[in-house]
Length: 134
Length: 134
Length: 134
Length: 134
Image (tube, rainbow over all chains, first blue to last red; front, side, top):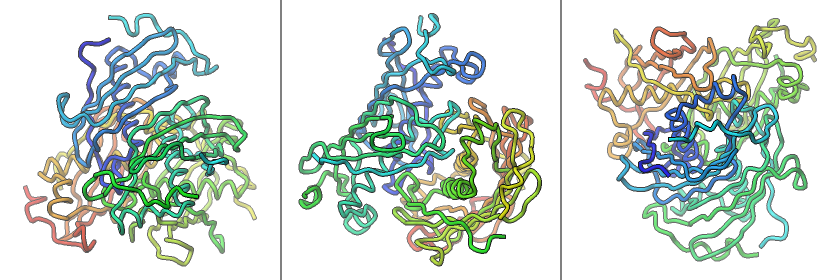
């Protein structure tokens, strides 16, 4: 729904790679979440305040990812995040990972469904109306 | 295609959890891979020998996961792995994560497509015929 | 102070390695903590109950480690833990990591100082007298 | 030996925290290495080229760390790196982690000894003379 996706740079360090010489597959999910966190921050959401002051939190309900090309040690990646669907207490996000820049090689595509929960009851709760508004 | 899935126990340590008090979502993918590694070992595949002596390796092409209930600090989990489809140079795997035991609470379901590669050329290569045979 | 140290097996998976082909240095600290957790469990401490029911927790105050030989992908390691000093609200632990078995190659030695805290105030608090008694 | 240490920012994400609500102790070592990597980059060392083209690599021989105050979810940290001693094939590094800025709260101090190895023989090898020169 966004014309230009939010984009966040991620550098690949030794910690992210494995003995195959490339980024370990589970670590792409860490990169994806960093970009989502920064995208939420760009929308005004500080997740620590959300959790500790308002007792609300986002959780991943489901995710899928296609790994097209491997990211390598020392690569500079760009990770995008954009809204793909919105309900009262959940939403979809589409994300891509590129090498070097937004028009670089596409390494990974991912989509997920996230829910907004009351951190005490763990029940879904209504998101602030202003969150994803223009 | 297997009647009883391969199952592998995983204990949840502090390293696996996050400030929400539950297992961090990317870490389930580490648990899933431990079970796949042990399942392959049970079929006779030692992935270090495969990589260093035969220059072959498995890579994840795509994966999806549904997170139904959170795993908590100190939980004992059981992670399954079973073949769901087989081609010349790739295969599907279905996996579940349960709390405590195979008939415990179902926390996560996942399916993935893996490929078998030549580690030097990174091209798909034929898997040993005996690998998934009874 | 223990004659025979507590020992816990750890398998090296892809997640633990890096592009140098060996275990990434920070991950040894995860292995060390798994052994400490299991050693505490062997002494009757379930850290989730300690945290959630008694609001007490252990934290690492300082640690040092010597890396003598690298652990490699698929290695089976043995990690020890033994008490090296005891005060009212803190204690020392000595740990080693061996390849294959307790008389195998010594890969890593580590010592740390841990404190016992009230999880609400984060102040040091007296440990149960029975904890490290014979 | 440096007047002003090299400093690198690190944001704390969910991936870095644990169920105690603070940064998991082993993850500070990941932060420390990111700052060392960027410090080496500022000195002209790209470690991927070093490893793949020159078959040379840095490894940590020993490290110690004092954890003074916990870093929390969403904190912005500053991690320093400075040379503390230099031999033919090894060197010392001193590092600190601060909250928010270089004159913020001191959370962690660390010192380590690193070696420069031939990546094929794993033997220590002489560092480029220009590396740590002014």
